Image (tube, rainbow, N blue to C red):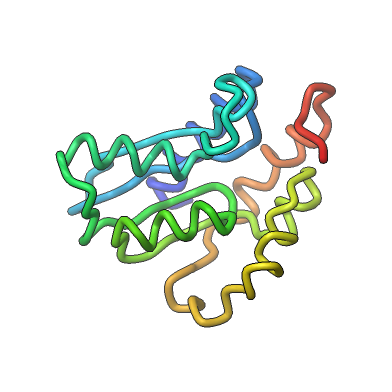
Length: 153
């Protein structure tokens, strides 16, 4: 497993184990070093925008004292929802690696693909998004899916 995806998975496990939100964790990497990390805290904070990617971007921006994350890569356990994908683009993140797909997100109870369809999809961004380590992260999604206190829409 990629070491940065492993770090994102550790973040996601914090979300699931702490009942903070869904199985989403993310790290931002620059020059081979993690400069930002975050996990889903939607439930914990009662804030629909507290996704792992957003938390990681905020953390990286603070570390760099800049809103411009050019030269950075984001690793996340789940393919970013449209909000998070747009945040990555706004922050000028160079590329995104994700483990579980939008379809995996849907199986875990999330409606990312519904919003993605509404926004027109992401076909033009195929070189921006890359799937890695899915089989290593999928068990956490399944664990989350089997929990009693999951987010359901």
